[in-house]
Image (cartoon, rainbow, N blue to C red; front, side):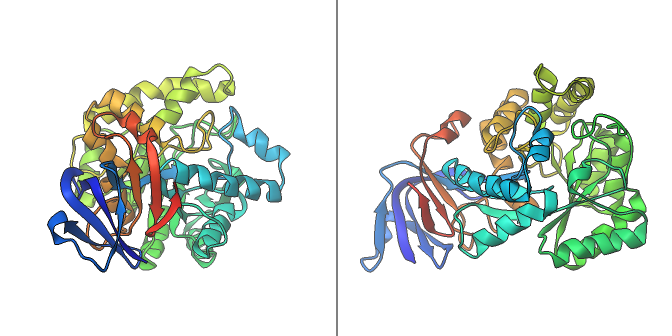
Length: 390
């Protein structure tokens, strides 16, 4: 597989700078070279991009592919068996491709379903984005989201739990450091710290030995602090971030995936379960303030939609980007959260059009740097250099 996509306007490198009069030479599933137009090579196949915009494939850092994004997805789980949940998860893969989302990170899955879907894509059994999946979440007994939890209590169980997920093929480890807004109508609070710092430290140490990142569901302050001190790689949600915590994250290289849209949605809709709506209403203002205050700090901020969660359908990444833009109206910097920043957070060569990076590419009819809504104008999508949507 070797060819050049030319006659395109390339959003190149870490800053997504528009580059004209060049093509992208694809070879062995990677971006081999940015080829100036004057260096035309007769032995290569050229694909005419018709002056459209070529950007790196989008990355969604926080999804739940076996949830359905209805008003109450837990209710759907109760009605469906394992087989139906697996079919549902597979069915969403093409939706991601058609939206130009070429990598997703699934962090929380009943019966490790996302691990099986990820393996199916790797083996070429189904078409879909690259899925980096955690499978079950490591959670204290009775903790947040028990339906996809592997309960662990104490350092020894935490060690066994993380080793189990690694053995099953997890490529990221998910922990619940606090309670949450949705999932259980009683027995948890967003402010409650759940897994201890000591338990999380064991998990982080073991995961890092195997080259895996750790993502922490963390809303309340104490839980965020425990996760940062334990060495997690990303704080998911992070409503109660403050100056001290952000400074610690800067010092330790901890990234933040705020997932703004899902909480704003839960707080705004009447059909959402009442307990979840009430908890969301109490914290969305703090969430917005934290995002506005800390967006320009020296931490990586990534885009995660929490797709599958209440009223957050799959491929809700654009909704998340538009919500970010509402609070920080800087198109390029917001787009980087789902490309450059996201690739750096994953520690993989994705999210940039750069030599040596994976050839995950999206051809758009309109310039996304002018308007994020132009991300809807998908013309072609490439994954590992292969045309998967046109």
